[in-house]
Length: 298
Image (cartoon, rainbow, N blue to C red):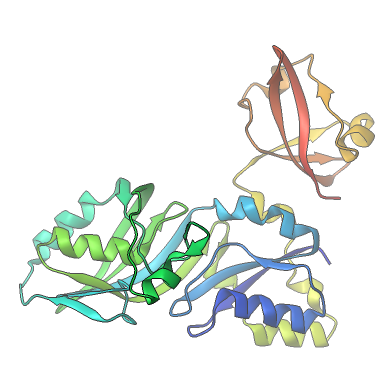
């Protein structure tokens, strides 16, 4: 079994809990997720099985879309509702200022990763250090906010949708917006709507996975592994190159016209004989352009 399941992760379960349950339901070991979703969040969690686990690193780079709620007036140590309140403010913020600051945060943003995160410092996860009361120096990281729309403002709560790049901490975004508004803020709700191209409308529950597997209908919900790589351009090689491609051999490129829209080192979805072969790219070695497969997924 090779492919991806678009799983809806309910609040209260960790991403690893979902992986463990999928392994138990399907009776296979080769299962992995494509980017951690915190236990207090819900939403889309693509789960790779079989050979598709080798594509998870590419899915990690996919853009994400979230529905989040920002509660103003309080700052917590975890930047979300589970944390201890550190600071409080009674400042009333105008709707005009909220709209202005949300616009300000669109585009390139530098975030300081929260201490309560899975990033590592000298081999130890930051949240483990934070639980011991230890805070270490972190470097700001560049992320990108592609779009951010306010859905509702009620009292001190702002519901919004954000489309962002890999590595974006929405709770840090809430914290930073609060401070920019001259008050404090924490993330009080989070649901992941999309890990491109997997969306919440097509996500399934663990219960559905269990029922489909029991009824031998698992193929109905198993998504081909190349579907999750739609962000990459696709290229079809002629049939006579099947053997070289499937063996991962390098191919010298004499005619570059067919690759005119492709950049050097750009990841490509490779097909031959109407079959998905894997991920490949063009490289420049000793001034000679060569095509090579990065991952053969047959």
